[in-house]
Length: 151
Image 1 (cartoon, rainbow, N blue to C red):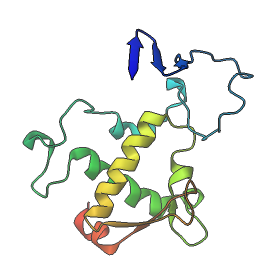
Image 2: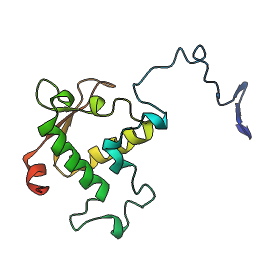
Image 3: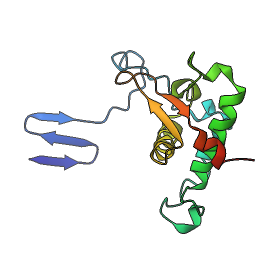
Image 4: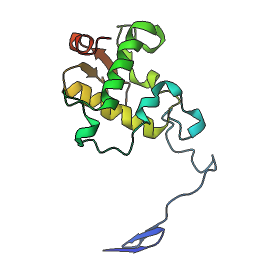
């Protein structure tokens, strides 16, 4: 049985309160994901993931005739440009590295990028591979992405 009070949760003999501590000694057991929660650390190159955040995904105004949202189309274009211009974001196999692209970005931006990556995967425009749980995700652009998003 849960008894809730503002700011706390009780279950049986356990009572927990959300941590508001930012003391590094209190957080030493937490894993460092490499993602930043600090807005100042945001990079402008993924600005399109921040734009239009309140537009419902299913609304007709937010989608093009092919059923992709503007955010998804912008990510496809970004990945296309990134794959041809930046060897630093690519793994030795030539695939793009999601962790390298998202290094220093906020969790919110990383979550949005991950979602849009899954949309592109479901449409057959990219392929994704992750060798082990919690390891880097490599993105391989398929020819369909290049033919669909020509300048």
